Image (cartoon, rainbow, N blue to C red; front, side):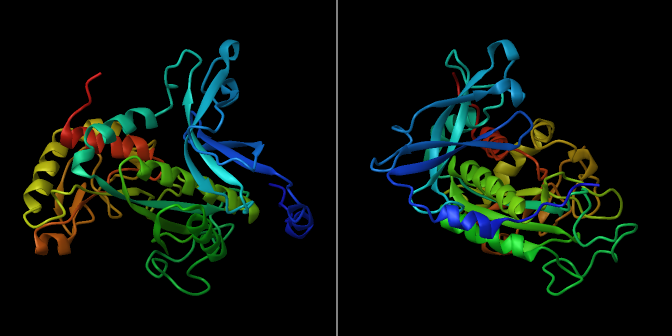
Length: 359
């Protein structure tokens, strides 16, 4: 049995009220080899105005995160985005970073670097993204919150956007996370309970270009930290519970300036045609264990078949009915799993629609 965590929030509070003098706390965040966020704290001079250019490059032990061998373990983290810190507040900041090797090459698991190049090369198309992050809240025994210990809850139906005891659990975590994202400056546009009990979703966007991946990763970090305070675990597994339950995805909404104006439907249809020719390339970077989710059931398309349709949540690509009626707007790629890397998802969408970037 897992040991229950005891909250010491009241005890911590008296230390949080201590004067930080002229010290600023910067929480450096990076993504490890397993697609999990890691972080550590650095103290800085609070009298200075820090930017991504002036913040110090730091390093960590990559052999402990699966990102480097033990005999050459230093991995450098370069600041790329700064957010207000909702956990420490005040002048303290969150610093999102990229991982680089000692020889000046991007680390193998640094997917942001290539994504940023694609976004920059095709910036004239003004790509907008909105990603819908589904996740499941687990107790410390890895059982979904609110589920019977020796059985299953009632079948799916009352839980999606549900209200009331017996329908939703851990709304306090969801509310805390929403406010933390807003405080940090993450572009969060909403949240709701999902189809499977103990499953929730938040939406990040619309964001242009590389900011989509940055904001989603910081939102993931904040969700893990908030859940930590409440003694809960966050699962991004695309099929956390086998059986007749919905999986978890990272539905990805995409548009360009050409798609968002009158006559844009022809650009949407042209993009979907290009995506249809690279289905397997997309599936390869759309998350681990996605085959357990993309079965053609539970509002998914089959993993080995590409399909598209208006208002069809069983298709690979869905065109919202409103957009089809207007003749312009955006489309939704429903294939990415909840554990997919947003840099890889948005990057390959840009590559498939507009072409790769030459070295």
